[in-house]
Length: 203
Image (cartoon, rainbow, N blue to C red; front, side):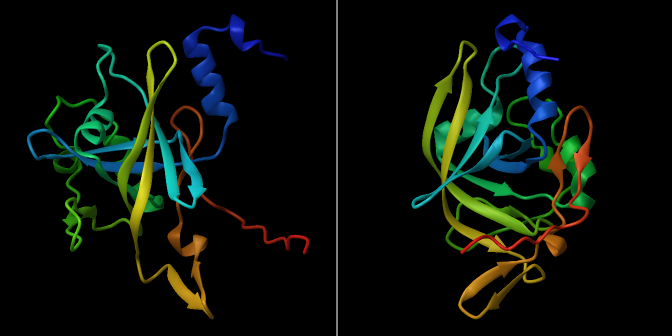
C-alpha cells in the first residue's frame, strides 16, 4: 500500500500520522488561564529539538470552533508553562484531562490532581509526576492553513523525583524503568516500555 498524502483528506492524514509515528512521548502541559486557574492538557506531537539552548517543541491545534486551544493562548499570553512526563499509573488522568472545557476552567480540578509549588517559579507542578520541565516560551510558529501552533519552549529547570534519578560519577542517570513513562499510539492506545534493549554504540 502506498498512500499519497496529497490525495488524502486532512483527517485521513492525521489518523495515518498518529498510527505510523509511534510511540510518541507525551507532554502533559500545565499553563495559566487569564483568570489565574490552571489548564492541564496532553500533547503527543512533542519532542526535544535542541540542547544548547535546551528547547522542546509541542504542536497545538485549534478547538472545533477554530479558536486557539487554551494551552496555545495561555503560553502566548504568559510565556511560562510546565511539561510533565506522565507514567503508567496516570494514564486515565491524562486521558480525562483531554476533555474540552470552557476557557478558564481547570482540568486539574476535574481530575482531582494535587499540585506543588516550586520556589522561584510562577507555576506549580503536578505532585505525582516524576518529571516536570519548567519552560518559558522561546517562539511560536503558525503552520498550515488552520493554522497549527508549533510552540518552542526553553527549559529553565527540571524537577526529577529522587526515585528515578542518581549520579554515576559526574553523570546524571535517570532510570527509564523507574520512570515507567507512557507513550501515545493511534486511537485510544498507549504504550509502556516493556523490554529495554541496551546496545553499545560504536566508538
